[in-house]
Length: 525
Image (cartoon, rainbow, N blue to C red; front, side, top):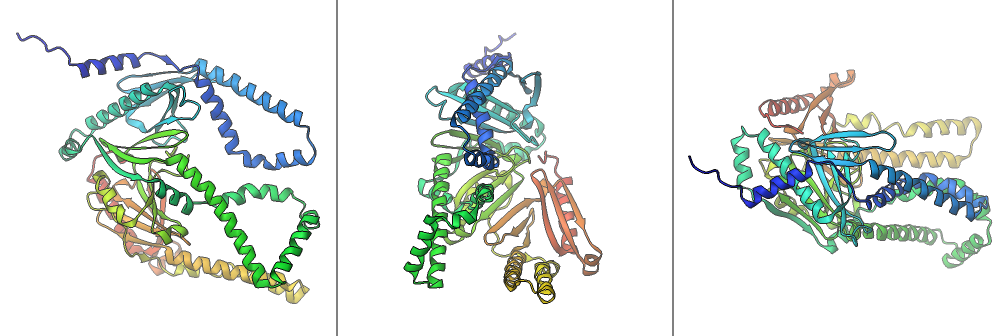
């Protein structure tokens, strides 16, 4: 009888790692710091809602001593809660699931199957970098928040733990799909690690400039503006001096004054763009996206280093976004939309993204991700527009307020300026509705459907038939006579609507999606 072969070094290491992880473990006391900073971050992220309160306190001359005492009390309270959380937090890993026990006043145990893990994010905040510690965030499909957050781990141990979870997850997926010979051959022939794309500092600066969202300024400034007494501000000596200087500089010329106002607006946008550019560089530089087996790994971050992991099979929709400024520099932002819940980039807002992508780079990037499509993924050059009935149903709505004010002008002799403002607003909204209508469209492909939309910018969404969970055709009585319909495509990442398309096209999309799903036995998620 032949002697049993002793296990090799790798097998012995894996066995030791698994046995060491199967016991309940506590986090480092440094995790208290992470709990406190996490709570402060949540408070500050919603601080715009407290701006009116701060402004009211400042207006009423609230003592600075009270403010300091309040901040100290808040910090003591958060530290106490963080200490209790640290004392009650435990975790362990076996071959099938990750177990986490936590709680503040009551103990809660989470059992997370490894096959449900969607993302594994490695973070190293600035306060952990000198200590060589890191945070590991495990997210699952369909979760609305982080399922597990392991704070203050040794950075090397966190990387090993991350790779261990990815390896176990990959092994579980392989066992589930063991019957698919083509898939197994594809996995075997694919290199273990493959670079997908990198972004330079220049490209990240460009991304920060064109992706700038000026509307956040309005959201933050709105509550403050409502608290300001504008009549007193207009009568202040500073404002009067400024108005006199503008009148002298422009010689009371309306066009010059208009140019000056537009120039100030552009200056404000540039200043906010600088903030956006700084945020882009700090968050993503040096940006790198790699493929490890069947998982995407995104790394980057100057102050807080991040490494995100996303299983390719979790990607539901590829969203190509091109804001107005990006159109002038021929750049796109690519979002890899995944199962709805806690997203990699921002909670319920954005998904793992690839910034500042040229049109010519799209096809080479996706050629390295064959699991997303059997055919080449490239942007369509044209699309089929929706029916003009969509526009007819809405184009007259902005003129309702104008008609009412016009009637009141003839009956009650109200100020004509209100009527003029209402007319200009109605024309402006009608023009925007027309642009919106012209942007709506779709493209049918063999294995997917594309949705085109946008207003000043452009958006393309590629929806694979194999990812569609349910379809819904909606018809009003008028749409039935016109042979039109709304089509809702339900995916794990959300619902996508194609409005006012021919009923024949809607039926074709339904048939293709159902035929694709019924002939494939892989997990759609």
